Length: 325
Image (cartoon, rainbow, N blue to C red; front, side, top):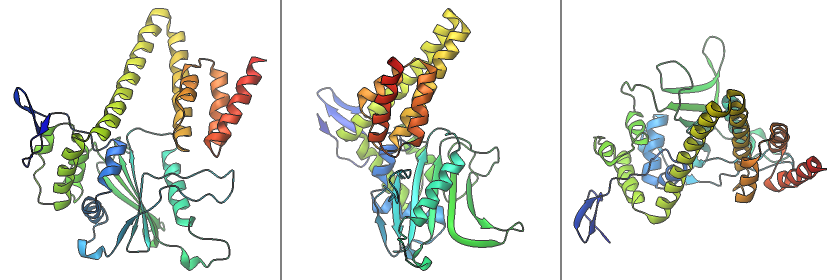
Protein backbone atom coordinates (compact mmCIF):
# COMPACT_ATOMS: atom_id res chain seq x y z
CA UNK A 1 0.00 0.00 0.00
CA UNK A 2 1.44 3.38 -1.05
CA UNK A 3 0.54 6.70 0.58
CA UNK A 4 -0.47 9.51 -1.78
CA UNK A 5 1.97 12.38 -1.17
CA UNK A 6 -0.14 15.40 -2.13
CA UNK A 7 -0.91 18.18 0.35
CA UNK A 8 -4.08 16.67 1.83
CA UNK A 9 -2.42 13.43 2.99
CA UNK A 10 -5.95 12.06 3.36
CA UNK A 11 -5.81 9.47 0.54
CA UNK A 12 -3.99 6.19 0.12
CA UNK A 13 -3.47 4.03 -2.95
CA UNK A 14 -4.67 0.46 -3.26
CA UNK A 15 -4.97 -2.00 -6.14
CA UNK A 16 -8.47 -0.58 -6.71
CA UNK A 17 -7.27 3.01 -6.99
CA UNK A 18 -7.38 5.93 -4.54
CA UNK A 19 -9.48 5.56 -1.41
CA UNK A 20 -10.25 8.09 1.25
CA UNK A 21 -8.48 7.78 4.62
CA UNK A 22 -11.42 8.79 6.83
CA UNK A 23 -10.23 7.83 10.31
CA UNK A 24 -8.60 10.81 12.08
CA UNK A 25 -6.97 10.43 15.50
CA UNK A 26 -8.80 12.60 18.03
CA UNK A 27 -6.53 15.41 19.22
CA UNK A 28 -8.02 15.20 22.72
CA UNK A 29 -6.71 11.65 23.10
CA UNK A 30 -3.79 11.87 25.57
CA UNK A 31 -1.02 10.30 23.46
CA UNK A 32 -2.00 12.42 20.45
CA UNK A 33 -1.98 15.68 22.43
CA UNK A 34 1.46 14.94 23.90
CA UNK A 35 2.84 14.11 20.46
CA UNK A 36 1.38 17.32 19.00
CA UNK A 37 2.99 19.49 21.66
CA UNK A 38 6.39 17.97 20.95
CA UNK A 39 6.20 20.03 17.75
CA UNK A 40 7.69 23.45 18.71
CA UNK A 41 5.61 25.38 16.15
CA UNK A 42 2.34 23.98 17.52
CA UNK A 43 3.39 24.41 21.15
CA UNK A 44 4.59 27.98 20.66
CA UNK A 45 1.42 29.21 18.93
CA UNK A 46 -0.84 27.39 21.39
CA UNK A 47 0.90 29.06 24.35
CA UNK A 48 0.79 32.47 22.64
CA UNK A 49 -2.96 32.19 22.01
CA UNK A 50 -3.80 30.90 25.50
CA UNK A 51 -1.50 33.28 27.41
CA UNK A 52 -2.21 36.19 25.02
CA UNK A 53 1.44 36.93 24.30
CA UNK A 54 3.20 37.69 21.01
CA UNK A 55 5.36 35.04 19.28
CA UNK A 56 8.39 37.38 19.52
CA UNK A 57 7.96 37.38 23.32
CA UNK A 58 8.83 33.66 23.33
CA UNK A 59 12.62 33.76 23.65
CA UNK A 60 13.06 30.10 24.62
CA UNK A 61 10.90 27.04 25.09
CA UNK A 62 11.93 23.64 26.46
CA UNK A 63 9.99 20.46 27.26
CA UNK A 64 10.82 19.17 30.76
CA UNK A 65 10.56 15.91 32.69
CA UNK A 66 6.86 15.56 33.61
CA UNK A 67 7.59 13.54 36.79
CA UNK A 68 7.79 16.01 39.68
CA UNK A 69 10.43 15.46 42.38
CA UNK A 70 9.34 13.75 45.62
CA UNK A 71 10.83 15.12 48.86
CA UNK A 72 9.79 12.16 51.04
CA UNK A 73 9.25 8.47 50.39
CA UNK A 74 5.53 8.56 51.22
CA UNK A 75 4.88 11.87 49.46
CA UNK A 76 2.41 11.62 46.55
CA UNK A 77 4.12 11.51 43.16
CA UNK A 78 3.14 14.27 40.72
CA UNK A 79 2.93 13.23 37.07
CA UNK A 80 2.05 15.91 34.52
CA UNK A 81 0.86 15.56 30.89
CA UNK A 82 3.12 18.17 29.24
CA UNK A 83 5.59 20.34 31.17
CA UNK A 84 7.24 23.32 29.46
CA UNK A 85 9.81 25.87 30.58
CA UNK A 86 9.20 29.23 28.88
CA UNK A 87 11.89 31.92 28.64
CA UNK A 88 14.09 30.07 31.17
CA UNK A 89 11.96 30.99 34.19
CA UNK A 90 8.24 30.17 33.69
CA UNK A 91 7.01 26.59 34.16
CA UNK A 92 3.81 25.61 32.37
CA UNK A 93 1.81 22.42 32.86
CA UNK A 94 -0.62 21.55 30.03
CA UNK A 95 -3.22 18.95 31.00
CA UNK A 96 -6.05 17.34 29.05
CA UNK A 97 -8.97 15.92 31.06
CA UNK A 98 -11.76 14.09 29.23
CA UNK A 99 -13.93 13.14 32.20
CA UNK A 100 -14.85 14.62 35.57
CA UNK A 101 -12.70 13.57 38.53
CA UNK A 102 -13.65 13.78 42.18
CA UNK A 103 -12.09 16.85 43.87
CA UNK A 104 -10.77 18.02 40.49
CA UNK A 105 -10.22 21.58 41.74
CA UNK A 106 -8.07 20.41 44.67
CA UNK A 107 -6.15 18.12 42.34
CA UNK A 108 -5.27 21.09 40.11
CA UNK A 109 -4.12 23.19 43.07
CA UNK A 110 -2.02 20.25 44.30
CA UNK A 111 -0.18 19.91 40.98
CA UNK A 112 0.32 23.66 40.58
CA UNK A 113 1.66 24.00 44.14
CA UNK A 114 3.93 20.97 43.70
CA UNK A 115 5.25 22.38 40.43
CA UNK A 116 5.93 25.73 42.15
CA UNK A 117 7.98 24.20 44.99
CA UNK A 118 9.63 21.30 43.14
CA UNK A 119 12.89 23.11 42.32
CA UNK A 120 13.50 24.71 45.73
CA UNK A 121 15.99 22.75 47.82
CA UNK A 122 16.63 22.99 51.54
CA UNK A 123 18.39 26.24 52.51
CA UNK A 124 17.80 27.96 49.17
CA UNK A 125 16.32 31.48 48.96
CA UNK A 126 12.69 32.00 47.98
CA UNK A 127 13.83 34.15 45.06
CA UNK A 128 14.64 30.89 43.26
CA UNK A 129 10.90 30.16 43.00
CA UNK A 130 9.63 30.84 39.48
CA UNK A 131 6.16 31.64 38.11
CA UNK A 132 4.02 28.59 37.32
CA UNK A 133 1.04 28.34 34.99
CA UNK A 134 -1.45 25.51 34.69
CA UNK A 135 -3.46 25.09 31.47
CA UNK A 136 -6.33 22.61 31.81
CA UNK A 137 -8.20 21.56 28.67
CA UNK A 138 -11.50 20.02 29.79
CA UNK A 139 -13.85 17.89 27.71
CA UNK A 140 -16.65 18.57 30.19
CA UNK A 141 -18.36 21.63 31.65
CA UNK A 142 -16.81 22.65 34.95
CA UNK A 143 -19.43 25.37 35.53
CA UNK A 144 -22.75 26.52 34.05
CA UNK A 145 -21.25 29.87 33.02
CA UNK A 146 -20.99 30.77 29.31
CA UNK A 147 -17.30 31.75 29.62
CA UNK A 148 -15.09 28.92 28.34
CA UNK A 149 -11.57 30.33 28.88
CA UNK A 150 -11.10 31.50 32.44
CA UNK A 151 -7.93 32.66 34.19
CA UNK A 152 -7.46 32.40 37.97
CA UNK A 153 -4.86 34.21 40.11
CA UNK A 154 -4.41 35.32 43.72
CA UNK A 155 -6.65 38.35 44.30
CA UNK A 156 -8.24 40.17 47.23
CA UNK A 157 -11.99 40.61 47.69
CA UNK A 158 -11.98 43.74 45.52
CA UNK A 159 -10.28 41.94 42.63
CA UNK A 160 -6.83 43.48 43.09
CA UNK A 161 -3.96 41.14 42.22
CA UNK A 162 -1.88 39.88 45.14
CA UNK A 163 0.55 37.94 42.93
CA UNK A 164 0.73 36.46 39.45
CA UNK A 165 3.30 33.86 40.53
CA UNK A 166 0.61 31.15 40.17
CA UNK A 167 -1.91 31.21 37.34
CA UNK A 168 -4.51 28.67 36.22
CA UNK A 169 -6.18 28.66 32.79
CA UNK A 170 -9.29 26.51 32.27
CA UNK A 171 -10.48 25.86 28.70
CA UNK A 172 -13.81 24.03 28.31
CA UNK A 173 -14.22 22.35 24.91
CA UNK A 174 -17.98 21.83 24.82
CA UNK A 175 -19.25 25.41 25.26
CA UNK A 176 -20.47 27.87 22.61
CA UNK A 177 -17.64 29.93 21.12
CA UNK A 178 -17.77 33.71 20.96
CA UNK A 179 -14.63 34.84 19.13
CA UNK A 180 -11.66 34.40 21.48
CA UNK A 181 -8.07 33.64 20.46
CA UNK A 182 -8.42 30.02 21.58
CA UNK A 183 -11.51 29.28 19.44
CA UNK A 184 -9.67 27.56 16.58
CA UNK A 185 -7.75 25.43 19.07
CA UNK A 186 -11.06 24.34 20.63
CA UNK A 187 -12.41 23.48 17.17
CA UNK A 188 -9.22 21.53 16.49
CA UNK A 189 -9.40 19.53 19.73
CA UNK A 190 -13.05 18.66 18.98
CA UNK A 191 -12.31 17.28 15.50
CA UNK A 192 -13.48 13.70 14.93
CA UNK A 193 -13.27 13.37 11.14
CA UNK A 194 -11.45 14.60 8.04
CA UNK A 195 -14.54 16.59 7.07
CA UNK A 196 -14.47 18.52 10.36
CA UNK A 197 -10.74 19.09 9.93
CA UNK A 198 -11.33 20.67 6.52
CA UNK A 199 -13.91 23.03 8.03
CA UNK A 200 -11.25 24.76 10.14
CA UNK A 201 -10.32 27.78 8.02
CA UNK A 202 -7.58 29.76 9.73
CA UNK A 203 -4.45 31.80 9.05
CA UNK A 204 -2.95 30.74 12.38
CA UNK A 205 0.28 28.94 11.37
CA UNK A 206 0.21 26.93 14.61
CA UNK A 207 -3.23 25.51 13.82
CA UNK A 208 -2.19 24.84 10.22
CA UNK A 209 0.85 22.91 11.45
CA UNK A 210 -1.33 21.04 13.96
CA UNK A 211 -3.71 19.97 11.19
CA UNK A 212 -0.81 18.68 9.07
CA UNK A 213 0.68 16.88 12.08
CA UNK A 214 -2.65 15.29 13.02
CA UNK A 215 -3.10 13.94 9.50
CA UNK A 216 0.44 12.57 9.56
CA UNK A 217 -0.13 10.90 12.93
CA UNK A 218 -3.43 9.45 11.75
CA UNK A 219 -1.43 7.41 9.22
CA UNK A 220 1.42 6.56 11.61
CA UNK A 221 1.22 2.89 12.57
CA UNK A 222 2.49 3.04 16.20
CA UNK A 223 0.19 5.91 17.18
CA UNK A 224 -2.69 4.40 15.23
CA UNK A 225 -2.30 1.20 17.29
CA UNK A 226 -2.37 3.19 20.55
CA UNK A 227 -5.36 5.23 19.42
CA UNK A 228 -7.35 2.21 18.29
CA UNK A 229 -6.54 0.47 21.60
CA UNK A 230 -7.87 3.55 23.40
CA UNK A 231 -11.04 3.53 21.27
CA UNK A 232 -11.49 -0.19 21.97
CA UNK A 233 -11.23 0.49 25.70
CA UNK A 234 -13.97 3.14 25.42
CA UNK A 235 -16.19 0.80 23.43
CA UNK A 236 -15.58 -2.04 25.89
CA UNK A 237 -16.46 0.23 28.82
CA UNK A 238 -19.69 1.29 27.11
CA UNK A 239 -20.50 -2.34 26.29
CA UNK A 240 -19.81 -3.33 29.89
CA UNK A 241 -22.10 -0.57 31.23
CA UNK A 242 -24.78 -1.65 28.78
CA UNK A 243 -24.36 -5.24 29.94
CA UNK A 244 -24.65 -4.19 33.59
CA UNK A 245 -27.85 -2.30 32.78
CA UNK A 246 -29.39 -5.29 31.01
CA UNK A 247 -28.34 -7.64 33.81
CA UNK A 248 -29.74 -5.23 36.36
CA UNK A 249 -33.13 -5.27 34.66
CA UNK A 250 -33.10 -9.03 34.28
CA UNK A 251 -31.82 -9.98 37.75
CA UNK A 252 -33.13 -7.08 39.79
CA UNK A 253 -32.17 -3.44 40.23
CA UNK A 254 -30.31 -4.09 43.49
CA UNK A 255 -27.90 -6.56 41.92
CA UNK A 256 -27.32 -4.29 38.92
CA UNK A 257 -26.48 -1.36 41.18
CA UNK A 258 -24.06 -3.51 43.20
CA UNK A 259 -22.24 -4.65 40.07
CA UNK A 260 -22.09 -1.12 38.69
CA UNK A 261 -20.77 0.16 42.03
CA UNK A 262 -18.06 -2.52 42.08
CA UNK A 263 -16.99 -1.63 38.55
CA UNK A 264 -16.96 2.07 39.45
CA UNK A 265 -14.74 1.52 42.49
CA UNK A 266 -12.44 -0.75 40.45
CA UNK A 267 -12.09 1.98 37.78
CA UNK A 268 -11.20 4.56 40.46
CA UNK A 269 -8.54 2.24 41.91
CA UNK A 270 -6.94 1.74 38.48
CA UNK A 271 -7.01 5.51 37.75
CA UNK A 272 -5.26 6.23 41.07
CA UNK A 273 -2.59 3.63 40.29
CA UNK A 274 -2.02 4.97 36.77
CA UNK A 275 -0.73 8.20 38.34
CA UNK A 276 2.31 6.13 39.44
CA UNK A 277 2.96 4.55 36.03
CA UNK A 278 1.76 1.67 33.84
CA UNK A 279 -0.41 -0.77 35.81
CA UNK A 280 0.35 -4.48 35.08
CA UNK A 281 -2.45 -6.14 33.12
CA UNK A 282 -2.73 -9.00 35.64
CA UNK A 283 -3.27 -6.51 38.46
CA UNK A 284 -5.88 -4.63 36.39
CA UNK A 285 -7.68 -7.92 35.68
CA UNK A 286 -7.82 -8.92 39.36
CA UNK A 287 -9.13 -5.51 40.41
CA UNK A 288 -11.70 -5.33 37.58
CA UNK A 289 -13.04 -8.83 38.29
CA UNK A 290 -13.44 -8.32 42.03
CA UNK A 291 -17.10 -8.00 43.09
CA UNK A 292 -16.68 -7.81 46.88
CA UNK A 293 -17.44 -4.13 47.65
CA UNK A 294 -15.64 -4.18 51.02
CA UNK A 295 -12.51 -5.69 49.47
CA UNK A 296 -12.58 -3.05 46.74
CA UNK A 297 -12.92 -0.32 49.35
CA UNK A 298 -9.85 -1.64 51.18
CA UNK A 299 -7.89 -1.61 47.91
CA UNK A 300 -9.17 1.90 47.14
CA UNK A 301 -7.89 3.20 50.51
CA UNK A 302 -4.54 1.53 49.87
CA UNK A 303 -4.31 3.04 46.35
CA UNK A 304 -5.08 6.53 47.68
CA UNK A 305 -2.35 6.30 50.34
CA UNK A 306 0.43 4.56 48.39
CA UNK A 307 3.42 6.41 46.97
CA UNK A 308 4.29 3.85 44.27
CA UNK A 309 2.90 0.85 42.38
CA UNK A 310 5.31 -1.41 44.25
CA UNK A 311 3.95 -0.26 47.62
CA UNK A 312 0.37 -0.88 46.51
CA UNK A 313 1.22 -4.35 45.18
CA UNK A 314 2.73 -5.31 48.54
CA UNK A 315 -0.38 -4.08 50.34
CA UNK A 316 -2.58 -5.68 47.68
CA UNK A 317 -1.15 -9.15 48.29
CA UNK A 318 -1.35 -8.69 52.08
CA UNK A 319 -4.97 -7.55 51.94
CA UNK A 320 -5.86 -10.31 49.48
CA UNK A 321 -4.20 -12.96 51.64
CA UNK A 322 -5.79 -11.74 54.90
CA UNK A 323 -9.20 -11.81 53.24
CA UNK A 324 -8.81 -15.50 52.40
CA UNK A 325 -7.76 -16.60 55.92
